[in-house]
Image 1 (tube, rainbow, N blue to C red):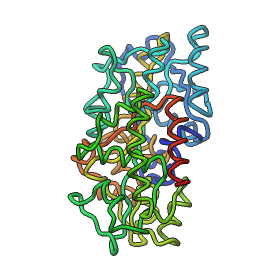
Image 2 (image 1 turned 135 degrees about the vertical axis):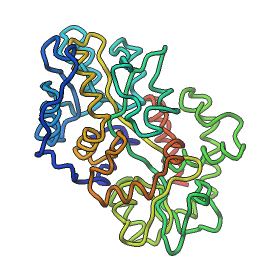
Image 3 (image 1 turned 60 degrees about the vertical axis):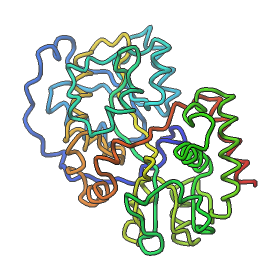
Length: 378
């Protein structure tokens, strides 16, 4: 699957599950209203994850009696196009874009708000459905999207050569003059880290976040971040763009610190490396469920979203995507090695402090690429 560059390429971090989806409980009693129409839900989701159809949807059906009619699409652009068509055909009830796309769906009249009284909002892990993520998911008083899976980009470090603690871990370490030739990172992420770090110490004329919505402000702020990042370029022993390159930076090219996906930290956990969020907050992405404006099976869609917020449902969904579960207790139903890594990396304070990647429109992504190229070429 190919999503935005800031979201879904780090899926190797969480693999496998210990929940035994083949051993299912008897169907649960569900609200009569959930069976009032067809007893089905028409779901448009991500292609390339066969476990969803093979195990996850059957598990949901066994729990609720609701059948999932699953249509796969390869990208968010395809989701959006098909959702537009569904406004005439009524083909779909719900879909699963990322948080940064939900506003665009709403502005185009494609989605309605969820009835949160019929969900179980307390099921979600702290910081995923509340706080800044919850604020971004709510427009005009309507809850447009509820979480399904999530992941992060934070600090990978050598436990021997660059030991970190929750108190000492900071984005500023990436640019510390004492770390020449010791760091790795992805160019556009490093520029964002520089901007966030400068913002945190009061060195920007405007909040960094404002550059994501205003082209002129972006140029003003990213020019500053680029200039400072170029000064620290000697710190970076290697740039990475994918998982293999990120691991090679540490295992082959001598990096002892880097800003990387959680997959890198997980994959290097037995080779002398740790993974911690910086005190400024780990970069984070999440995808979630939206309810189409003309959904026919609203109660059934609500039941699916609600089940994915449970420990069992979130573990199943996250395992299918090799991502992090959104429901409390979900991590404990996954592979023990995954649970150990997750719990060592994120306490409740770190979860509340997640920095969700802001909305990134096409103009922004294009300009961001120009700045990344300038950093690499400097």
